[in-house]
Image 1 (spheres, one colour):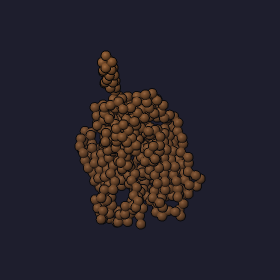
Image 2: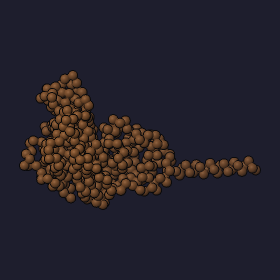
Image 3: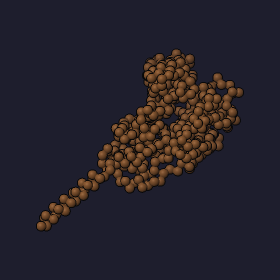
Image 4: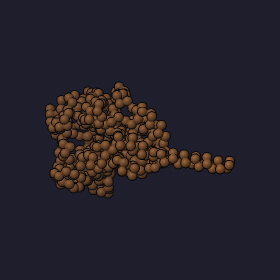
Amino acid sequence: MKSRGLVILASVALLISCNREESAVASFNIIQTKILDTNCAITGCHGSTADPSFQQHGLVLTGAAAYDQLINRPPKNANALKDGLLLVKPFKADQSLLFHKLLPLDHHANTDYGNLMPLGLRPLTNGEIEFIRRWIEAGAPLQGDVVDQELLTDTTRLDNTKFESLPPPPAGQGFQIKLDPFAVAPKFEREFFVYKKVGNTSGVYVNRFEIKMRANSHHFILYDFNSQLPATSRPAFNAVRDIRSQTGDLIYPNMLPMAFHVFVIGSQSPSFSYAFPSGVALFLPPDMALDMNSHYVNKSFSEITGEVNVNLYTLPQAEVKNVVRALNLGNQSLELPPNQRTTATKTFPMAKRTFIVALTSHTHQFGEKFVIRIAGGSRNGEVVYTNTDWHHPPMISFNPPIALNPGEGLTSEITYRNTTAATVRFGLTSQDEMGIIFGYYYEQ
């Protein structure tokens, strides 16, 4: 009888255990239904291949696709790819871009992995972020209850209303320019320009930039103007020039100065720093002004606040060995037939011996892949820059710089995918296209 009782008890225990396993919800299913479906797999973001942003990230996070899209897949972000990250690397949360993209603090150590996600919404709760981290550390399985759901009861999250300003450079070592707090209306993307003076009464040499922004910034860029725009025709100082009305219509007069922009520096990350090589600096003449371009995304039903701080760190003239100038090489002969891919190529030869210290790229929404090659010389055809994310082009530094002899140069090789029924040409609006090599160089 005693032996029979033990068998019955063991059977009951086994049955309870099996029922518990059958009723347990897979941890990834919880991530999908409670996190991805409500924050990521939404229209305009990661909902389908028809989303306008799909060409940027190439990532669909709906229930049918998300797992295979994430596991052991390389990222499109160039810096993350360079650092050896995967979108999700099982057992390695710190090597998984998904985890990094959810952390609201300065987790990249000044490496630009793009925007904090979910863009335009509140950051995930601490519990949701920890749940995803532990799922990755447990091997990121499709099936299996591997993470305690109790974690999700921690609903604390980063307070987007708080912002710790960037301390300005020490006296005599630089300048700070700001976009003071501004409103971004609910369910609205606000992008605008403000032309501001740096504050230098004499010429200065800038060798480092630092940028800090509130959450939900899509991007921030500093521009100079080229010599084709006379000083008398430049925008009024400190005037806010929105490029869209509250109804979403483009305000074309505010966009016209964009045709004369020269890229200086930019970031998609809330915290960013960039430095030229030792002894290399950008000269700013006395009474310099820069055009500040801020783009914020608000997908919530409440107004949010944007804010941007920029530090320009200077170098004593005695320490400057080479003064860089902005590189601005654009292909304006674009004609992209409807509903097809087109590759546009243009070579830009150098008139003097030139040293390239940094490169980045600029296209609009149809830009699918931007390649820069060396043209001529012993390195003819060598690829020195590749970008497949038109909205997040990396700034690539070269130390030692790329040396080009007279007659040698750079070739832009840009693949566009025109998904419309109309021919697209070079132009200023988001419906038009561009293809520009930006960067820095000096001559000898």
